[in-house]
Image (cartoon, rainbow, N blue to C red; front, side):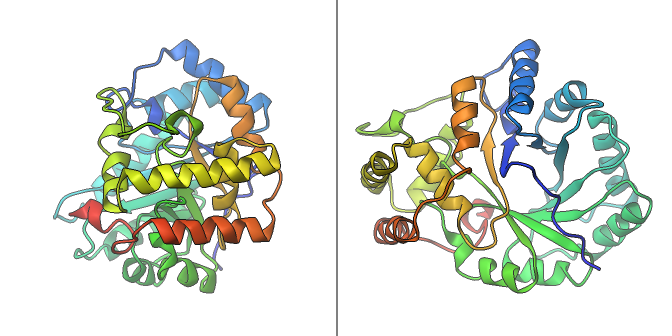
Amino acid sequence: MMPSFPVIPRSLVVGCWQLDDRSWRSQSESDIFRAIDTYLALGVTTFDTADIYGRSETLLGKALKGRDCKVFTKAVFFGDEMPSSSQVRNKIDNSLRNLKRDTLELLQIHWYSPDLDFSEVFEQLNQMREQGKIQRIGVTNFNTPMLEKAIALAPICSNQVQYSLIDRRVESSMQPFCQQHDIALLPYGPLAGGYLSKKFVGVETPPRESDHARSFYYSSMIKAHGGWTPVQEMLTVLKEVAQKYKKTMVQVALNWVHQQPGVVAVISGLTLSRERMSLNAEALEWQLAPEDVQFLSEQSTRLFEQPGGIYSYEQG
């Protein structure tokens, strides 16, 4: 029987890529632990990380040991060679040690090359699930043919994909496939790395931020979807809708993603600002009217191109 997606008290998941100080501005452990305490106090109790996010798993292990929360992590496989069974086991065991947990609530597989046969990896994951080291298996950035193959090999409960008012590649085939097979969508990047916010209204060109992952990831995504001019138009639309609801533009953008078919929760990156934490959590506690969801979708369709499928241009 396919395991259901882990129940989340609040539908906001804290993305912890931001704890990787190789890609993002370095933050002190005390500030990070204080932020995590604040999230928990606000009722946000689910955190998403990965084995390649630098110190992220280790910091979460320290901060969350023995606390009532959920941690989702990823095992990431790059390159053009199949990992051995021992390499797969070592990855999972390392994550368990780093996170100081006996079992992983959700272990997500990121597989870079769609041309490799990953059946042996999923066979190993099934064994570790039977051993209790993994509760549920998900994937991240799998395209539709890859996911179709994966569900024949293991009980896949979720696919983590980029999804925002700018990037809607998931809708072409992945979204209906997931609905058909009861697979949850877990969107990341709902704010396009923060670009869908008041901060960038009227900014003529996207800033160069060498200490911020936005500069090398989300800027290239925006370029692939039509460039900076349509982003500015989308910000004008978001501002209009936000004023109608007396909400922030960020809240409207998050709420739109949360209401899309098959979406069970939305990942938003960790912040040290208590105000932003609170506003992000509150963004999913109300609903845009159906006509406003449709209006935002129509404007997005008008403004942005949707080249390729899930993770297509990222793979080069």
